[in-house]
Image 1 (tube, rainbow, N blue to C red):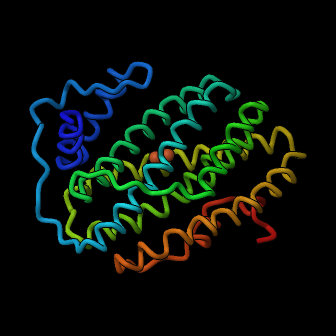
Image 2 (cartoon, rainbow, N blue to C red):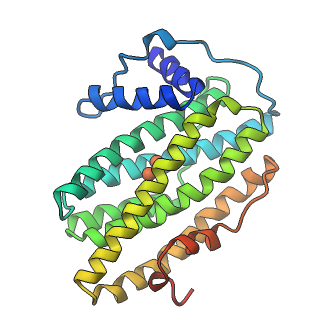
Image 3 (tube, rainbow, N blue to C red):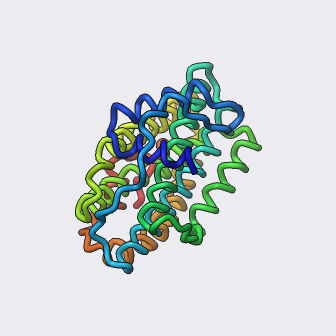
Length: 263
Ligand SMILES: [Fe+2]
Ligand SMILES: [Fe+2]
């Protein structure tokens, strides 16, 4: 509980504190156990003042919970990928990414709990996320790094980054403006992870041109799953009165043409 207060303090205090928080997590984390020593003086109670009806509060909590689920999958994925990545540099990047994702998951979990008034409101994990999780596990088991990257950093991260931008507007619209600094930080980290993924699949293609066909076929399925996954966000965004963008078009725009020539 106390740890959550500290985390909320980090959220409320903006990007500078979030960076210190991440640094503390990086320094103090041991086998998944997070301890935050440097945020002690920042412990504050949860502030009131949200302008949310119960229906909006539930919708926002569901959105935050699904984001937290996506972050947990990204965390597990990056940890697993670090065991099969081809270079020291990429393994290091993935280990750092896993720490980022753990931080993101905790931020969303805590924000969800905060918005629902301190109670845990369970949200079912979308089928597509479960599917991406098991596809990633299979790819790592098969030592297939490019496939794992396509699922995780290219699609999951790409989509997460796009959705976060609208979620940010939804949150701001409802008066939770103190989250802005941390959200900006998360957005920039997601963009970094996505760029890493694009770089990795491009490199894999240069090294082995025959991989193009296989990844293209795989991305056709991933685009369909992304479409289904996005549908689960329609209702909550509608309740929150957030105008939705064309997410699939935005995702396509960030992915190299050779991965979606037929879509
Ligand atoms: Fe993340
Ligand atoms: Fe990420």
